[in-house]
Image (cartoon, rainbow, N blue to C red; front, side, top):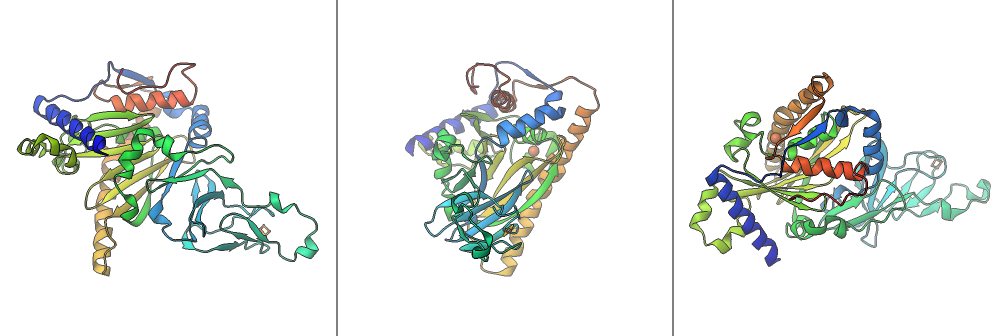
Length: 394
Ligand code: FES
Ligand SMILES: [Fe+2]
């Protein structure tokens, strides 16, 4: 763990240097990405098949299912997904589909239930997925019960995060998927936070939207009166961990670090600098001491749309209605900033891409996170042949 904070201290030192010298982390060159990568329906289908349906997706925090028999039921890219915590404490995921005649089982939302009854013919399942009962089994005939459990999806829980792969049978080891980001998330102790709510936010193509989380170059122009009052534009560190990214941003107040001994700089997150933690392909996590907003992006119904789930967690659950309402006001404020100053722009970018005005987008040397992200997308789509995995610094 010491290494983690030493590493943060090095990041803080670089961020301070960037502010004082008006520089930033840079890629070795500029990079062009074809506009068709954002528009082409076939590529978009491959992105869904080879990225969203094959890689671990962070679909729930542990604190959304804190108790035995808690569950969360949701639709992800049209797929009905049920996450449960059975009496053995283990998180499991299923396609939320009755094996009799494919009725969707559990209504969307969260709840607490040890067994589920299908509302069509009343078959029952335990929350570990086992078929318990066939209604009037004596009349049904011989059925191979072993094949009639809920269809299970790979699921693994680590550092307060529950990962699911949307294809049955694939291997999932969440700790190794997080790689160098594991310690980082574990240190946040997310299991102690209070999960308040999530709100969907519609937007442009998922990569247009994700691009917006991957740089701080747009802060001054797009977030003049909000983000930019805390964080200067175009000063950032980028660390790659496999396909994941930890983005460091200085605050305007970062020079206060000069008043502290150097060995304390790594302990000043949110007190001079901030991190955005990005998990490939679709997760962006901003944490401050008083609140945390994180986004889960999913391709929408068509290539030019995404649906983002904006989630809000807080250090403690307040005691009073008035204090809860205050949290809602905070959530609305952060939601509106992203909606009005990022997603609105994303929809205009989408229109610009569709206009035929240009064949390529250009990412500057000062946008290394976007370059890295698009290389990883190409890697998983196998567009790069046998080339090695992308690295942040070349
Ligand atoms: S479809 Fe579920 S019991 Fe018939
Ligand atoms: Fe933004």
